[in-house]
Amino acid sequence: MNMSIRLTKTLAIGTLLIYGASSYALQIKSEHAIVISNDTGAVLFEKAAGQPVPIASLTKLMTAMVVLDSKPDMNERIVINAADVDLLKHSKSLVPVGTTLPRKQVLQLALMSSENRAAAALARTYTGGYSAFLRAVNAKIKALGMTQTVIKEPTGLSPENMSSAADLAKMAIAASGYPDIVNITTHASDKFQMTRRSVTFHNTNQLVGAKGWDVRLSKTGFTNEAGHCLIMRIKQAGKQATLVLLNAKATAASRFDALNIRQLLDHRELAQVSMPTSRL
Image 1 (cartoon, rainbow, N blue to C red):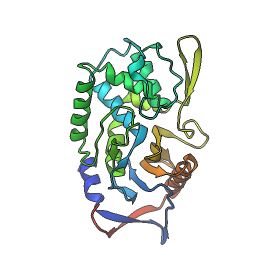
Image 2 (image 1 turned 45 degrees about the vertical axis):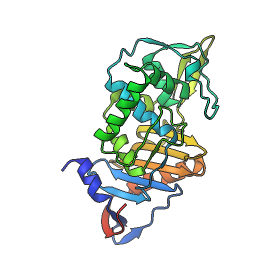
Image 3 (image 1 turned 30 degrees about the vertical axis):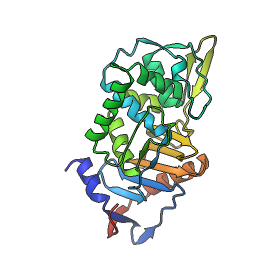
């Protein structure tokens, strides 16, 4: 049985986490969450995981996959232009209009430091143009079985980009199969040459590179509508897991949740007991 089938079946039940003879109540501050074992595909924890909500910059993982699927020239130089400026949220950017970078660095900026202008430029320069990019996104959503997902633009700034924690787990599992995405999202920082100076950009996830953390994939997101969002794949105590956290009230709350999940994986006698609940 492949992981996607196992995930679909498991989402119909709740979970009680057991350590030896005692139960463990995982405390999660995020409004929506799911934790999946990478080793078995089993859902270790879920909280309102089937409800579609705005996903902010988690969108950029989908943007990256679709761009890489098109197999573009990653050394081709892309000019960030006025069309890439955010006119919806008027978000700030460290990438000035006029900056010229190879596509591989534009992808790195979009994923590692969640630069909206970079993500917009990737979609704008997609083979066939922006409309072709959106068609490819919709095809990818369908191929991954993300039935609760709608993505209408590449950055995540629009609150109309919506998905569920369960669907985003499928996206994270798929993204982990792209070495470029894995390498980029697990770098803590890097320097880029802007129009007039060299600028250091940092990973928006402060847990990447932090002591005690073995992060295998990462993406953060935030808008007022989506709250603080986090996708990670981590390894702890020989176990690997994918976690999706949506709509936390603060970055610290997302980190609190991630720490509790990491501690959960520390328990070597972890087992899962299923309890019937309403279908998501």
